[in-house]
Image 1 (tube, each protein chain N blue to C red):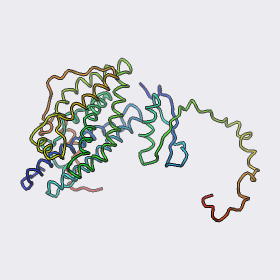
Image 2: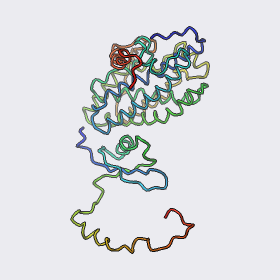
Image 3: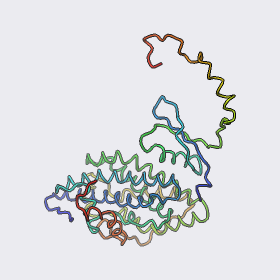
Image 4: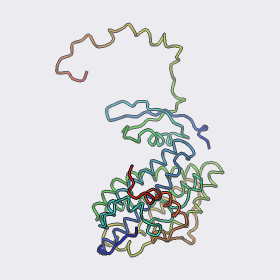
Length: 261
Length: 95
């Protein structure tokens, strides 16, 4: 399915695109977290990660349902999630990065995202869009907990054993190149910011950066240098990893359209 | 780090304001903060509570099953300790 956006006004198109970005981040990261189900290092953490995955999936459902309404083509949440191709996915590259069977990678990815996601949801509490405001009011409580969870693990791993310190620092270094995309701005962001619907992404940077510095300092970790930043996820240019996620996630609906339990 | 290295904690949940915390189960955690968050994640996923306590299992002194007779059986025939011999005024509800 490719979104046919011809009947939408420019404002609606921007909003639809913006909602897909928000929703796709939640869907893809939820899927990545879901891969830990039954595989996390300890039972308690297994449940904690799945709780977070389910929070994100719940957020995605609200956002995608709303996106379908804005689009006005009769697509519900399932149609948008299960029948859009890779190139139509608008998530950040950060959230599609694989777990590598390494809990440190999972935590570093989650922390970098949560610190940003929290600031984003906080900004959306003041959105001029009533639906997004309502979704943010529910999400902010969940996201506060996510950030707390991943921050504490950053500190435990960073300030833990020699091995845990090395692995979380390696994970942080490897994922850092995907953080530039969090604060990029394009025409959609400009339209959304101008309409008071969402923040200018750049405005989220100071608070994100402060959170990162505070947690890394306590975790005795070094902040990686800002080098070359990889981007493109928000424009549909994904790493090779997203295709595998979608193949697994969309298989059933692709093979048996409209299948129900 | 393996779960075996982490101490055991007992989890108590208060279902709603005014009620006492009740024992819900146990879990492993490295410290009190992690125990509290693990308790939140493992034991309150379905709206079970509004407040949590976690207590190191090692801090609990339990009665010895061998003391059962001396501890608990003597109360068996002391039914007068139950407040069932009083007439309760009609205005008093929830007794």
